[in-house]
Image (tube, rainbow, N blue to C red; front, top):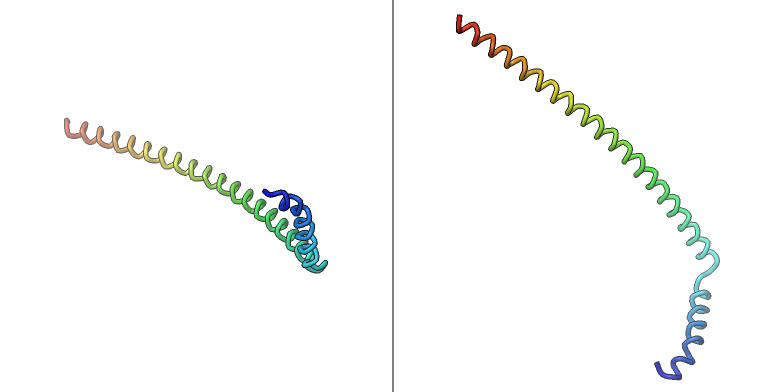
Length: 95
């Protein structure tokens, strides 16, 4: 940066700040603050919904695991019954 640019930088920054501050009315600032509060509230609601959804998902996963275990037990019982039936049939053929 040249020496003139360095000297003018603070003045440009002050002018830019004043220009931006002068462009925003207090109603604009109030509206933005209200929007920020609304967005913060929305984020909090979404976090709560997300937590509830994760909890529901965990419960559903537990129920699915329990159902899978019961199905496996039923399949094992059916296989055992089929094997007993087959043995009984084979035994009856040998007589």
